[in-house]
Length: 505
Image (cartoon, rainbow, N blue to C red; front, side):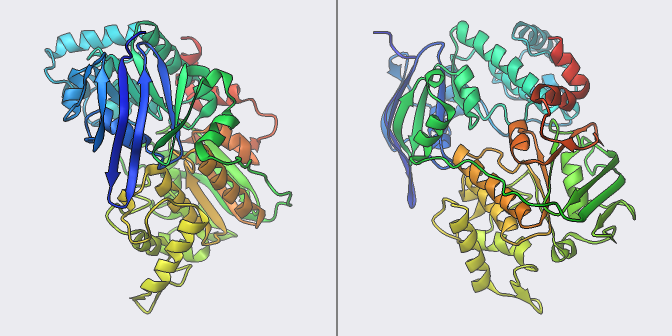
């Protein structure tokens, strides 16, 4: 029999109060694209951290090409031929592409030589990228290319990819898949983590499914439906979000000729943005990352200023109204960056519940904080949104990304807002949890709230939105009814000029 490229046998890792991985055994063959699937908190991140040398297993062994493999740190893993592209990019905006790549190399060559290699590799693998460009000026898809090329320059035998398509347009996804198939054909194995199961079916040769830290199933994705894979992940029947039939009400939120500068040197200014949202309506706003999504949420939440007459709530001008006062009026928001913006990493879940719930949930009075009531609110969020955590005293940073996302969304939904603005509501969330979050948003709209859902997941927007608009370079297209829109055309709209480039690749 062929010796696997990577073999894991009996891998176990425990933390206080939780077993992250228990007796995990799997093989990855040379040139295989192998999916690692599971709910949030199923143990995927811990497993790949052990492979990449970030975490030491408590028990079990790993082998690379039949030889012992026990990396003590990522440098040792890279030396053995393991590369990893993380979900969150680790790049410096003010530096060039070549400078960023040099920082990730053990012994970078002279800059002129490195620039030539970057150009060569980017052209070979269909990832066009100029080594001289400043990273802060790149789209999310181009930033991902920087991370991939940095890995490829080290000639990996195994490439680990964590949620690689979460910030890409459909056209960029296809380019990425062409690259991964080329790498696979050349003998590079790929361990691929994603919650987008149709992508798994299209790309992957095999899949290992984790639940509760254990391997519960393996399958051939192209022979298994997305629903079947999702149900293997959760161990139960998967619910499909359903929108209750309801009439639209009066206009709740009005945005008129909104123009606003970005607080970041690498951000995107908003330019003449106009739209209205009615009670009971979900307005979906799509766009490639970096086209003004954060700025739009910031203006609507009150974190960024706007001039009088640009944003109004049921006819009341919100210029000069701060975020806490807007919460009192019923305007709530959940930003994309969950750790550090939506939640304070080192604060407990109870403290994080207090941060945005103090006013609407009556968690403070006369300057005194009601901690028992705040804890009760946090416990309600945990229970109703199935947040996997030992309890409300745990710090936000102790949760997996998907579980923290459920907490952040649940915290805002349970406050019964009149207007909810949310950016990337199901980013990094498994299929079952994503369905639950989408259902919660639909139920909120059915109850008469006006929702603005900003997302890079087009399938999500098509599923829950009544109208759709595309945000590109700070400008918003005219919102149109979602029914009848073609996803391929929408993808090109979202890409703007870059989308035209993709269409000709």
